Image (cartoon, rainbow, N blue to C red):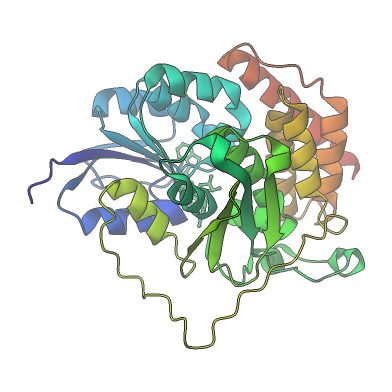
Length: 357
Ligand SMILES: NC(=O)c1ccc[n+]([C@@H]2O[C@H](COP(=O)([O-])OP(=O)(O)OC[C@H]3O[C@@H](n4cnc5c(N)ncnc54)[C@H](OP(=O)(O)O)[C@@H]3O)[C@@H](O)[C@H]2O)c1
């Protein structure tokens, strides 16, 4: 069957998601890489249009893509997400931080644009696939699974002296440094909780997080009739990346099929919110709304960078984020510029917190 060529702009092309996306794109002649961006690493010749740093929307204007894969890490992905949603261009979203910080502003841009928003986060891709075509009213709860990260089962005392190298050693996923630390603190699941709230228009009390160490089940939906749909597969980001890039085709990938008879067992437990307070802090920030999710994200970015630099202990990450949330005003942003201001102010507060921690 002849398929029209899809023109792809890949932002964050040198990262963990970016490199896996390049592999998927090169396996499909109907996917054409028209533009690529990185933050600082050179990418000359990777695509007809390339850009290192700078304003990503300039590149997107020139590229005229059919689909933007936003795999930039952190707040830096915000403008590209808003630009793409506003224009009704399909957005494959790995950069969860942009949806978390922009929240209602991003959803309003999405509604005006009317394009596709395809989550790349494995849990949200899974939920999207379980939900597809069903009304929100038919949903009882969305369940996001968390591997629990490298420190699952540890006590707070055991986490006092953990090093960046230990935090980066994720048991099931091989990811960039920021999201790896976020997985170790459970901040990543907190960001995903807020992302899910906006993506699927569900209140926070209908989104549950469970720890599932093997990361085989990515998400579940409990429907009001008592049926539960789950999405299973080996933890490999090429599956949700391929789903988003080739949607609605569900193209073949080189990932092995799930072996059920070989002794697969599925274990689920409640998260330990006392040892890992970032998940509860994210839920609180999400429920408070306004710029609180933006503040949560900014303080987390500052604290994670400080931890990776050896300027903050692991347990200090949650302390800095909690103090920043308490100190920031959290008022709802009227536009993108107010968000940028809230982000900058939260970063100043968080840097001060790192300095005294
Ligand atoms: N990795 C995963 O398995 C995974 C899973 C689910 C969701 N995600 C999400 O996907 C996003 C990317 O994660 P990752 O693990 O791929 O991160 P990563 O390996 O650290 O890569 C980050 C990418 O963003 C680029 N970048 C940073 N600042 C930029 C800027 N100002 N302008 C343009 N590009 C910039 C980097 O370029 P340089 O290399 O030049 O710095 C790099 O290409 C994050 O939001 C993460 O939460 C990742």
